[in-house]
Amino acid sequence: MEKHKYLEMLHKLNQEENLEESEIVSLLACDEQEITEQLFRLADQKRQHYVGDEVHLRGLIEFSNVCRKNCFYCGLRRDNRRLKRYRMSEEEIYEVGKKIAHLGIKTVVLQSGEDPFYDAKTVARLVKRLKKLNIAVTLSIGERKKEEYALWREAGADRYLLKQETFDRELFRKLHPDDDYDVRLECQHILKELDYQVGSGNMVGLPGQSEESLASDIKHFQKWDFDMIGIGPFIPHPDTPFGTFQMETEKKYLLTLKTLALTRILTKTALLPATTALGTLIPGGRERALQCGANVLMPNCTPFTYRTQYAIYPGKICLTEEWGSCLPCMKRMVENLGRRIADDYGHRRRIPLPK
Ligand code: 5AD
Ligand code: SF4
Ligand code: FES
Image (cartoon, rainbow, N blue to C red; front, side, top):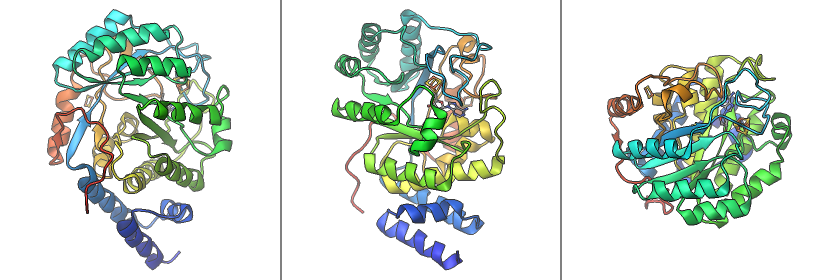
């Protein structure tokens, strides 16, 4: 495609903050550095315009690495016998939540594999206790029954993360031996009905994933109007069926950033994390993401002994021994970019600012 066609698309993106799926495909496939850089700059401007310079922190507690599912890409999959499994007790989780609140972080994210050991009542009780600390609570514990989602919402949970991973049906099937595409989406539907702030997201650089698949992801993010969208690179884990899949790092990196940039422009006010996976793929990856549309960071607040065992993918960063050290590290990161850490809860702002 000729260069002026790309420039036209960038112009349209700026004016209309929208593109056809086919146009997104061409931009994702475009390898002209100048175009890519203009796309990143535009995403940074739109981020500034719609959500400002504040970066929101979410204190992450990975409280169990036990999973009943067998997703082909994930190190926590049930057939991975090489992983030492752990479960934090309710009391332990609460104590970590308390420490996060005392650091001044206004959101706690409770994340785990799909572990039915934590029944609906236990989770509800924990949410209730955490909410008394005056913080927002995000759950990220997979597919559950409507009644359970409802109970936790009543208990005070604010947000729920449940990534689709891909909106390409065929690819979804190839990644998920236990999951049904429509069931996953139905969960999102239910969560929205229950008035959660709902998060989705994808992985970039999966085996068999085309630019068309990624363009479809971006259009679905827009159409569903998700409040949070986690976009991260796929990093092969040696103890999984996809362990040997290879893709050039630089290519995957740029593709992830482009997906993020386009998502920012099309969703305007969504909360987009600079993912740990991107920081793992490339040093400085999260900093770059913050300049391509991202406005959220998730300090890892899992106690050290467990943290090393939450090995979704290899080489994960932030495996520091001293608890809480991501916070000063992230403060520096944000300051170096001339941005600031938000001190509110960081809820999604649904009404866009006037232009
Ligand atoms: N590389 C990158 N991200 C992964 N996830 C799972 N496996 C990998 C991997 N190999 C992400 C998925 C999932 C979450 C548990 O971690 O997006 O939602
Ligand atoms: Fe379990 Fe989630 Fe990993 Fe799938 S992606 S194996 S559901 S932790
Ligand atoms: Fe975790 Fe730097 S952000 S150690």
